[in-house]
Image 1 (cartoon, chains in turn blue, yellow):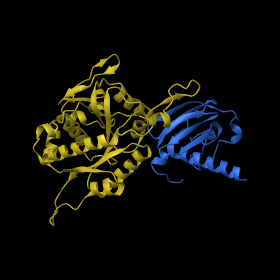
Image 2 (cartoon, rainbow over the protein chains, first blue to last red):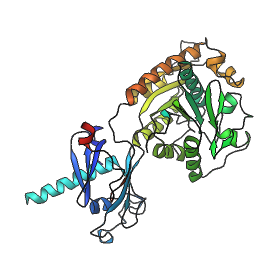
Image 3 (tube, rainbow over the protein chains, first blue to last red):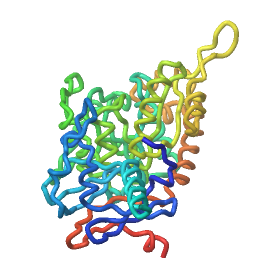
Image 4 (spheres, rainbow over the protein chains, first blue to last red):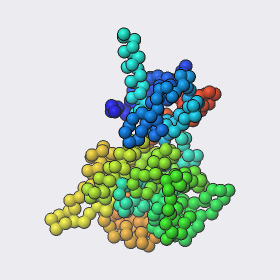
Length: 114
Length: 279
C-alpha cells in the first residue's frame, strides 16, 4: 500500500453526511466515505481471507442501503464500525481509511471526466 | 478511549527481548519521578513473570479489595499493583490471550489509583496480546523501549518499536541498560541503544551502566534510587527521568481526535470536527 505522511493519516475531525461520513485530515484535506463503500472495504478476517488476501465479502452480499449505526475509536490508530447488517469485527486503521478515501475520490474524478 | 480519570500520563515500559532489566528500569524511573515531586503509580502487567514485588521487597503483601476495586500497595511513596500479589510468587499464571486482555484492563481501570501524575506500566516482553490490548484499550501517553547494548537485543527491540508505530503510540525514547564491560582494548564496543535511536529517529534517553549497586539493590528488595542514590547508575537514572519528563511535555500536544463512541442515529458522542477544533 502507498505510504503516507503523518499528517495524511492523522484525523482532526469527522462529520456525518447523507449516507456516509467525512473524515478531515491534518494535511488539510477532507475525504468523503459512503457507507456501502466503507463496508465493502472491511479488512477483517471474515471479509478477507487471512492467507491468500482474497476478498470473501462480495458486493452482492451488502445491501445498497447499509448504514453505520455506531463508530468508535480504537486506541489512537483506527476506528471500529457497527453496521446495520450486524457486522462489527472490522477495524479500520487510519492508513486504510486514507487509502480508501483517496481511491474513491480518484474514481469519482475519472467518472466525471468521461 | 478517553483519558483515565485522575491519571495524567500513562507510560508503558517495553522491550522486545526479555531479561534486559525492564522491571528495574520501570521501578527506578517511577522512583525518579517521585523524587521530582510527582504522584506515581507502578502497575506490573508482566503477568507471566511479575518481578516487581521481589525487586521492591513486598512479595508477601496482599492488596485489599474494596467495592470490587483493588487497593494498590504503598511503598517508597509509590502505589504499586502486580500480578505477583494475586497469584503465589511461585505459581505460574497460565493464561490465554482473552484472559490477558481482561487482566490488563483490570490492572488499569479496576485499581484505586487515585490522583496520579504518572502511571508506569511494566509490560511483558514481546509483541503479543498484552501489548496489543493495551494499545487498543488504554490511553497511553507513550512507550519507553528498553534494550541492552548488544545487536540481538536491538533487533528484537526494533520489532517492538515498529509495533508501537503501527498502533500510533508515541515512543518517548530508548533506554540502554547494562551498558559497559570494558574490553582489554578499551571501552565497551557495544552501542546498541544509540544505534536503535539513530535507526528510528526516536530520542535516546540515556544508558545505565553495568553497576553492582543495581543488582545488589534488586536482591535486597530496595530500589536503587533510595538504596544507593549516589551511585553512577542512580545518577544516570535521574538524568533519564529528566529527559523523559521533557519528552512527555513535548509529546502531549493535542492534535489528533482522541477517544470517542459515536452514535450516528442520535449524534451522541460525535467526535469533533475541524471547524470546532479550530474555533
